[in-house]
View (tube, rainbow, N blue to C red):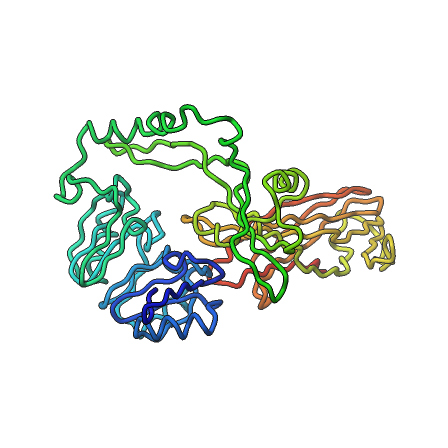
Length: 416
């Protein structure tokens, strides 16, 4: 962003990938809630628009999930009613119908026309046309169907992917030769590595990219082990196939200036204690491994009715192992919640979700049933679970709950 001849580089949600986290039209600018005041002021000053803070489907990756123009916005179908209402002052708005849900990635539009992912249904195309008030055409850019990721369109023109073909510019379908070139691109890339020594082929490298003299810390950026990426690709005959291949892993973290890492030191860290992935990788990763939260949980007494049916006698509360409060029935089932772990994930089809792992311990000599309630940060119910726990054993149960449109906090309660 140029301002009076100076280079002003902004970050939103801690990332320089502005197009992933924010979206802008001729009349509106949407940014995530964590956008800082300086970034807000700079955006308003240079774009002439007051930023509106919001989430979409509980996510901050607005650029991936929203596409709009001066007439309205098309939004991922996972957006909540509250989020849709928040955008009501910006014109027409509609959820994108169908399984392809990342509207910002699959629609490229201005106030005149829109090109969209070739796999969008007629119903989706009609909704886009009606909401944005433009003609809609399916197509690709640079051989990619995620046209919203490849280019930027305004009412003054379009900045397109550098690999856009003449055929795509002319609106023609790709030929067999074009498709053959795309298929053989891997072999062409192999030729580029001929003669390169093995040491230079290592991907596990690190570099410090910023020094902060006030804190004596350096920002390090590093590449880790190669991972596998699997992509669902459309076939010309209408079928779908899976393409798999390598992809880089990326890390960023701070180190004391006196402990700047070498490549060798970084490789030792990768083996012993690798850092967590940046949270913004949720915009393209199916699972967000860095968001591993030891969530709060609450232990409660378990009523005698939760023990085996047909047991006689009164239930008596006792202090469980290590002083924890459990619940003892006449059959001596003493159950407590030992551990609760939550992993937050996101994908295009489901939006935000929480993968919960619940560990229950029964130190008694009879089987009991634990009633576990999962709630969001505001205490609203997400799920109710009944988990049998055999005597003198630990049971681990997993549950996946939808948290789209909610905060990314999940708590558990052991209830009577």
